[in-house]
Structure formats: C-alpha cells, structure tokens
Length: 275
Image (cartoon, rainbow, N blue to C red; front, side, top):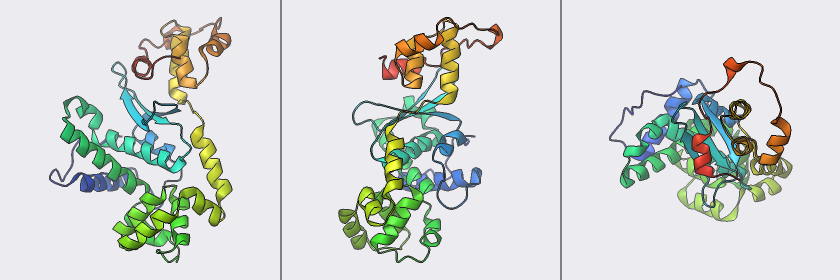
C-alpha cells in the first residue's frame, strides 16, 4: 500500500524527509522496531516485483513501471557485496513510497538529486532505525569493533551505514566512527567475530540471479499465447531463450480466459535489452 504522495514536512531537508518516510513506512506496515528479517518483504509491502539480475556496470538497481498494467518491477544487480545490495533494494522502495515514479517525468536535475538523497536516507533508517540501536547492542560497548560487527550482522547493513547510524544516534563519536570505518569491512568483521560462513552464504545469495515469481508466471502465460517472445521469458527467469523454447513450445493452453492480454515485459525488454 502506497502513501498519498505527500510529505508533512515539505520544507525539510531530503535527509529529514527520508527519516520521516521511513518512520511512517514502519508504522504503516506495523514492522517491529528491530532489523528487517527478510529484505524481500519491503518490496512486497509496496506491491512491487523483485528481480535480481545482471545490470549494466555502475547500475546497482532500478525501478520500472509497465505503462499498460502499472505493475512495478524493482531490478537489483547481482553483487558480491550483499549488504550494499540490501541498501540498493531499500533505496528503490524509498523512491516508490515517496511517489517518485509518478513524478519522475517532471523532475529537474536538482529535484532528482534531492530524491536520491531522500531515498538514501529512507534506506538507512528503514533498515536500521536509530531508536532500535541501543537495545540491539545488547550491552556491547558501541565504540568497539565487536559492537560494529554485531550491528552489521544483525541488521545486514554495511559498516559504513552502521557507523553512520551509530553516530546519528549519539552512540559513537565521529572520530571513532571514522577510525572504525577505515579499519573494518563486512567480510573482515565476519572473519574476526565468527560469522564468516553466514556472510559467505549472503554473498552467494546476492550473486545469484533470482526471477520474480509473478513476472515469470505472467511472461510464461503471455509466451504460450503468442503475446511475447521467448527472450522475455528468458529475461524473467535468467535462462537462455533456447531453454525456454525447449520447455514451453508445444504446451497447450487449456483456459483461454486466463491469457494475459498486455505484454508484462514491454518496459523490461526495452530497458535491459534482449540476450
């Protein structure tokens, strides 16, 4: 469910707007104050499909909306840096929740910059609310590497985001945050504090393309009815067009009433290109 495209504090900075939106998002969806246990849940709450796929260099994520169906697809790049991937996903959810898709065609470069800053702020605060940190530290001294490791592991965020949130919450000094940020990365924290296997599993998951089930179902139905190409289904599933043809050619559609009339992949085909 999306908001009514309004911010109560229109004169707030983009950072403050992002905080306000993140707090409202959590209240609206009755999310527990602590970490988001399943990152994909964020996309479900804005009724968007999530596609993990290879994207062009320097593109971490993007959001597109099918002009015919109004369905929203968040595409997030495969990555060997899983917690950055989480942030990118939350950033895109922030754009959707703020109504940036509706306003995108009217944005000038300055406003677009503000929208990016707002989405960054939303991502940081929806993933790691300041008011939850002290409890989640569970008695750890927040100025230590052990505490940083605990926060990074628990919230599945990068050390940079974790340190920024600890600093904003007044739990760590700016100089200590800078020192820890220069010393530690997520993999080094995981190795030092005994959760490297868990981190490596996160890397493997973030590196693997994952189709969006609803999109796959729609694209498959549309292919069987002759509405879209094998390339569209291949894009949705992360396989080759030849494999699509081998699996689906010759299958019989029993219920013509269920045929998808609109091409659910028109915008994705044009954006990503075909194999």
